[in-house]
Length: 313
Ligand code: DON
Image 1: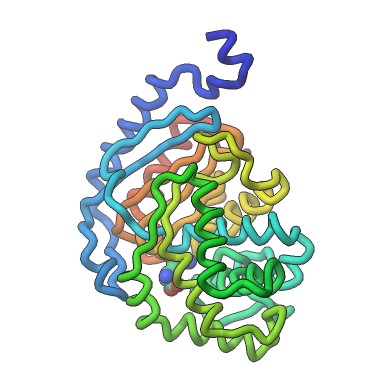
Image 2: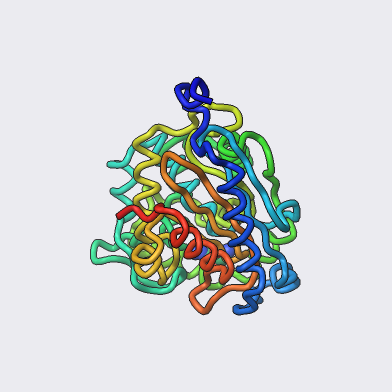
């Protein structure tokens, strides 16, 4: 045991005890019947509100899952920190933040609004994520076709997920594209204000945004399964900082106050949570609160910090 600890292979030594707490919190949240499943496209509206799964992976590879963890779900906005991470890693913070801010918007995630510099407020809301997607192509490899950009990004996501649990849901992609008036409006609005690095092809930018929303992944930072360091530490720090301040829609301030750990939620009911240098957690349960966060996911995080000293402050 001591030699494993010296090799940094036992980040949570009393693992069975810890997973027992996770299990207890899981069952407490299971009985939460609040919230409504997203209904703007049929594929999400059909989701069973009873689905509830939690998966934990520590930085030394200890893993625990409970509940509905094998039913595929789309990543939706949980893709945003990951696309942002790729942009940071390839372009650096200075370049990326010439185009997108770091402020919570204080508004809905899809509000037609830019900051006082006429940039999207941050990469965790729709406008910011659409913009970051455009940087991946124009600034990293301008010659990439949309198909190559899809593969490029998918490969990155796969490396982050250790190659596991990653797919693409074409039916949801097609539906999203049909129900995307607001996202297109955001795309045009940003073009009107010269937000993109060049006069990019807006159709491609929007398609890429919808596609990335329909990937799925578990974890961020060094992949604990393959031990590959996919992202530079600075990129991880920046991503976690903005997840902390902007990751939970218009509940981000309250979440940072009460729970105090970086997280990002998606409209499918997915929630990525990072306890820096300890573990990543993914929860999934489709019913959402009025701000768009998974009701069981938020409750689970609150339970977690009431049991363990994970709040940053
Ligand atoms: O872009 C959209 O409107 C949907 N795919 C919702 C994405 C989402 O999870 C909301 N995020 N901030």
